[in-house]
Image (cartoon, rainbow, N blue to C red; front, side):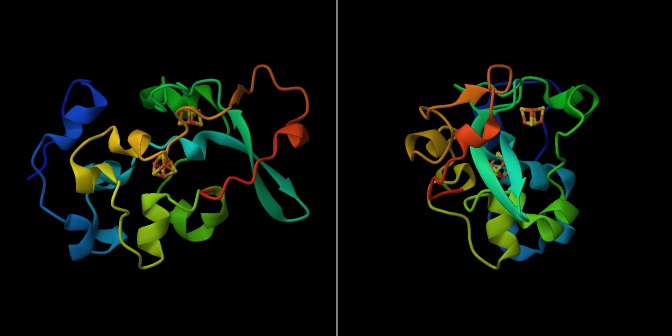
Length: 163
Ligand code: SF4
Ligand code: SF4
């Protein structure tokens, strides 16, 4: 059974540990353990882009949260994110089911909630945390701007096909 590391290790280490193979195919999202839920996150970072709500439609921007590391696409304050960022969203089952529009099309939680499977580049399939980057599915290498530098969010709306 997968054992979540007690101390912070390199992101890729979590895929080197044992977990029930294809657990996401064997039970619904609602039956996943906390560790299994966390493992499903592919680390793309795309949910940490700022969004705009215009006339009832959510639009993604290329403005990243100030705490998102643009290189490894990970939150730099993960353990304390809800205390430090008032509008940081908890990506839990309720969020996935009630606000799917705030997630990118590639998000593992969204795909599974739609009855789809994980993509071939997902780290749980490849066994490598960096496969999300090498497949071009993360924010790495994209033109981003920090929310600390942006003047007008509407100038930064993007229509990337994977959002
Ligand atoms: S969009 Fe989904 S898969 Fe990507 S980092 Fe956010 S929660 Fe994880
Ligand atoms: S604080 Fe929240 S929105 Fe910002 S990088 Fe961390 S998880 Fe993403």
